[in-house]
Image (cartoon, rainbow, N blue to C red; front, side, top):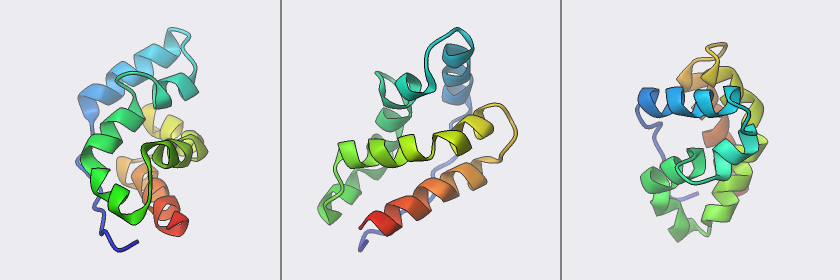
Length: 95
């Protein structure tokens, strides 16, 4: 990957909403890939990866593959840096 990605600041307000959606019965997959989900949030911050051939669908796949870490972050069992580090590692291996 020629684009250097940095971990964005933790989306604490969004995380609370995403966690509530799952607790209310929505699937984690839907929270990741649905409207106002984690993929939308990440794509707006990392759109530069498109120049490296990584599409929004590719990003969504990486986030889905990282769903366990993302869930553990949402419920407070992992830090943001641990969860996003997993995503960044998978993105860098994808390109």
